[in-house]
Structure formats: structure tokens, C-alpha cells
Length: 614
Image (cartoon, rainbow, N blue to C red; front, side, top):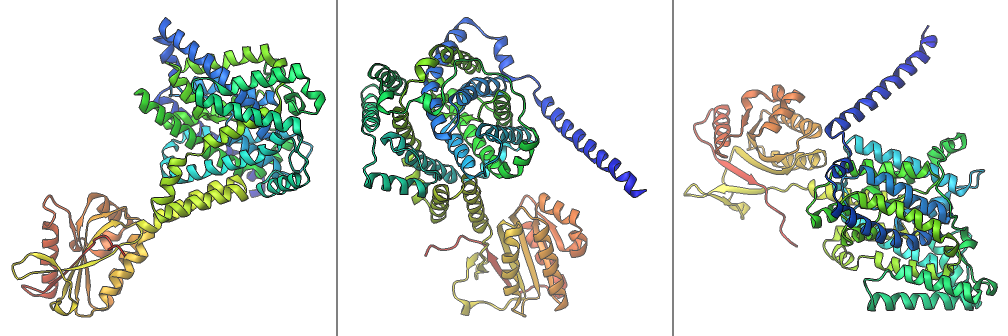
């Protein structure tokens, strides 16, 4: 009978899980069921329309050269990258709370996709099909995190990790484009070691293709000149036009110069709905790419929230991190259903949207629509652009991706920041990109926990006048039977063992009969700390000694009560905090004197203070 009921039990669990998920979604939508763009449209006017159209056109023109370059990095058809900006940008604009966020292909996503494809074994699935499964997972993770209101967790990821990761990605992009710049191609395995070996071998054997190298070097030089003399120009668009014209009139393809159409032609067609890529073979691919998808979702979330927060501060706007997660997920799911690669928030295009005068989320909608029109109109010309010119543009983008000022800060601020930076940076260069993210996050959290779990004690005593002073000389320590230990800082699981060890060291002095723990400034007690307190209480009782707790706040009292520790320690031995911070400790002293059956007793006081500098 149990066997017959097992399928019903499984079905019941699946149904309950689905109902719980729908309940979470319903609760999330109840908080604000109307998409932010709808409220903007209700009060839309001609001035906003004009500003959003101009800004959308500017962003669309900037997107074309970047998207073609990102296709070169990711090793995907140009059309799938452009469709990410068109379809993904449209879906994200419909749900984002930021008026200036622009979604689409980015440096980070492109290099993650390239690394993921290089690490996967050969199967019947094409590279684009694998990327669609990966993008679907990224979108589902982001939407789930947004519905569960996990956007606030990004504050626990150190900014040092992001800075180091961006620097590592910049090195990988630049190194990967040197071959295209000089016309020597790419190695079979596109990791840093193989790229370096391939470059050295090609240079030693003089395998450089002169026409390609000339196009690449002149494009890079012209990019730098335009950037210096005309910073308001779209230097990437200028280079595309000039390089494409040169390829057409000089017939560079006949001289062996690789063009965009050789890497994957830009098709001047509308994006076509393909549906979700979760076929049988796609489902088998999920376990292999899940960790990379999780890392990409985390990194994309960090980028989006960082960008929207920065732009919102400049524009005087308020954004919702959880809504941004949902918007990013919607953009990725919308993109993959039209056969496009996943994307993320673009800082360059989002900042351009703000500076170009974008007023509402409609600027992102117009950007996607105008980008589609431009692609349909100039697809034939885009196919003529030399890849060496795009490689030069990507190398300049990689240089700008490195935040030199923040790198200097994180490397010099603290030793732990330097360790996190170099670990993340080196892992990005030599290991899988998802490993680099998780390693950086793990080390930064471990560093934080180590710092938070280091309580120290300083001995105090009373002077002849009754004032509280530090006891610097142990030889002058008065005889005492009551020890007051002031605890300040975090008392979570990471600090519990150290806290207990220090108190036990004090307990080695058999002259002390009563210990008073002053928890007025202690925070975040948890189950581990409660168990440590109970073990300490039991150990003292075995030797005929006692533990009292004073300055108990409401939060601490709740933890003690709910865990049952209040009854085991004894309600008469716990003294709640009062308005006057010393009253509860005085009452604990009175209780200690009652226990000792003395009217007065010698007192030793231990008080936390920061550790002295070396």
C-alpha cells in the first residue's frame, strides 16, 4: 500500500511546492502590482517623448558596434547578440524601476559565455543552443531571487570582488583580441595560458598578417585620437563606418582580411520567437551549466543594482533592488525565447541614457525599437566591417573596464581587501569564471567573520574614590570574589567559542565565585552562543560557582526565552537592561552578594576595548 501511495505523495509534494511558489509570486505582486512604466505612461507628455526618443536613438547607435564586438568575444552569431539588446532590452524596460537602466550584451556576460562554451564537451547541441539553456537558467534564478526578495543580499558581497573580477575580465578580453588585431587567429582552447603561448609562437615565427595588422593598429590609433580630441563622439561608430568603407572600396576581403560576415553574418531580419530551449538534451545540460548560471546571475545582479543605485542618486530617483532582479530575469527570459544570448545591465549605455536626457523607461523601449530599424537598414554594410577594427575597439573597451582608482583603494585599504582582490583577480585569469566569483565572495565573507569573531577583554577595577579605572599592573589586582565581564560586539556562532574560552580562562581563578556577564552591548545571539552559555553555567555549578547575566536587551531576552535557556539559567539570575545602563549591573551585584551571603565583596571588572595596534 505504501508503494501504491508513493506516486500520490510525490504528486502532492510537487503540487504543494507549486502552490507555495505561486503564493510567493502573489505576495510579491501585491506589494506593487502595476509595472513602473505604466505609471510613467499615465503622465507622459510631449517633452518626455522628445527627450526619450533622442536618448533612445543615441543609445541604439552606441549599441551596434558594441554588440558586434561582443559577438566576437562570445563566439556567437552577431544576430543573437543584437537580438539580446532588442528583445531583452524591451522586456527589461517594461519591468525596471530605474528610468535609465539599459539591458543588453555586456563585456562580463560575453566573457562568461565564451568561458562556459570552452569548458563544455562537444555534443549535438550547437553553441547557441547551449547558450540559450544557460540564459534560461540565469533568467529563472534572477526572477526567483526577486520574488523571494533577495535583492538586499548583494550588500554582503564585497565591492573588492567586483573590482577584481572586472580587472580580470578586462585582461582576458584584451588578450583574446590580440590575435584578431594582428591577424594570427585564436588557439583551439581560449584560456589565458594557451592564448599567451599562441601569441608568442606566432610572433616568433612572424605569422602576422600585415593588412590585418595595419587595419587593427590604425583603428586603435584613430580610436585614441577621437577619444582625446572629440570625447563626445561615438568613436566606435566612427571606426565602424570608416573601416567598413575601407573594406568595400579597397576590397580587403580579397587580401585575406577577415570581415564580420566571416565570423557570422548580420542578418537583416526580424527576431523570431523560438520558445524556451528546455528540450531533452537541454535538460541534460542544466547540471553542467548551473553553477556558471548562478555566478552570472549574482554578478548580473550586482552590476544592475550598482548601476541603478548610482544613476538613481544622480537623478534623484528611488529604485527597488528586488524589482530590478525581476526586470533582469524578464530581460533574459525574453531574450532566450527569441534565440538571443543572455544579457545584463550596461553601465556605459545606461550612463549614456542619463546624459542624453532620457526621462522615463520609454527611452529603453525606444532604444530597442530604433535598434531594430537600424539593423534592418544597415545589415549589409555591417557585414563588411573588418574584425581587426572591432578587436581594436574591444581592446579600448577592456582598458576602460579597469577602474584604476578603485583598484588602488582596494589593494591598499586593508590586508584582507588585498587578499580578496588578488585571489579573485588570479582566479579570473586562470580558473573558471564562476569559480572566481565564488572564491572571491567566500574569502571576503570569511574575512568578515574572522574580524567579527574576535572579542577581547580588558580588566578594570575601582579606584580609592570609587571611580572605574583600568588595571594595568597585575600585581596591584585586589582580592575579589565577583567578576563583572562587560561583553561588547557580535555574539553569533563565529564568536561563541572564543567568547567561551576567554570566560573559562577567567574561571580558572578559583577565588572568583560569581561571574556577571554584562550583555548590554552584545548583539546577535544565536543558538551556538546560547549553548555556550548553558555549558558555562553547568561547568560553574559543578564547582559551586554561579553565572549571572545583566543588561539583557529585549532581543537577547527573546533568544534566551525561546531557546529555554532562561529557565535553565534561572529567571532570578537574569537582569533586564533599564534606562540607566548601570542599574541592572548593580542589581546583579546585589544578587551576587546574596549568593555569597556577604554585605560587600571585592569586585573585578573586565571591559571590552579594541585591540592595540602592533
